[in-house]
Length: 381
Image 1 (cartoon, rainbow, N blue to C red):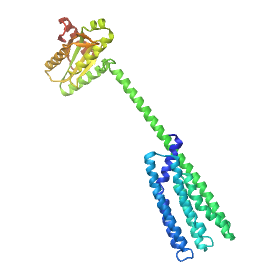
Image 2: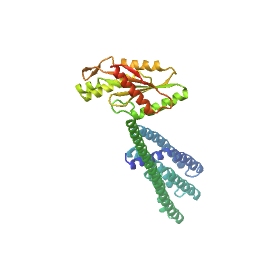
Image 3: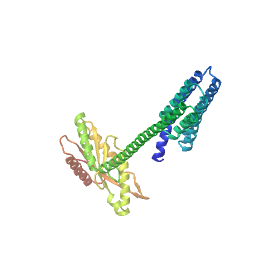
Image 4: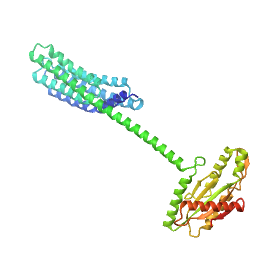
């Protein structure tokens, strides 16, 4: 939907939302004029006119509800707006008929009628200026009969009144146009601001998503999705600080795959990548949610066990045994059966020891395990 159409739709909604005020004004105004003419020569005509005004009001209420329903079901369209303007024209014709009733009427009646019509037109500036066609649909048939009647009158005072009525109407048209332009400008600015805010929000979400993606790439292994060495260091530091506060222990398991080079050489790097992904998935199932599994090299993985009891070596060895057990089952890689194993270096983190020292100690322990044979564990000295 174009910006212009959105503005027209918003102003039409404003026109409908303000429709009750002129309806109430028309009802009270018609009733007061009819009562003011009781006992006059044309009292019957004024009562009949009042009945017409109320019939038009009932019809407009019906059309107003129908218009609201059409907007809710089908949305805004210009033919709907023009049809609603026709109902305003009926109301304008009803009020314009007063011009014929005041012909040769007493001066007080003329003053009351002209004041009432001008008051209705002035009210139309406020309630209908959001839609200029609606303003003209009501005001032109409301003012024109009175102007014509007084213009062709032989009475000079009536002619002067017609001139002043024309001047008044031209002023109302000018005010209505200025009011309409102000409403359009304010609505345009509102929509442009909404569009700008929407664009900024979209840009922010895109940048935020890109930053999250970049942050994930910077801290995770692209193949397995596991934390990389950088994030491992952060997690290990957090685990040590938590252990210092809670008086619990932290341990490292450094795993290096056995037989991985043979898989790469025999079935290619793609098969090797699939094997690493499968290894990551299996190892993830043997640790707690509070622990960390990271990939720190080609076929090297590190597990951080946090919040361990003071005598936690047995717990560490139990996790190590579970890690060894996940390799007892063959790996199905691209239709081929592969055998993999692992050697594990174990170390308990000591307070004050640097992160790199801990990783180096666990790494050395892993190489000691390899010397013992496939599928072995060794504690760091």
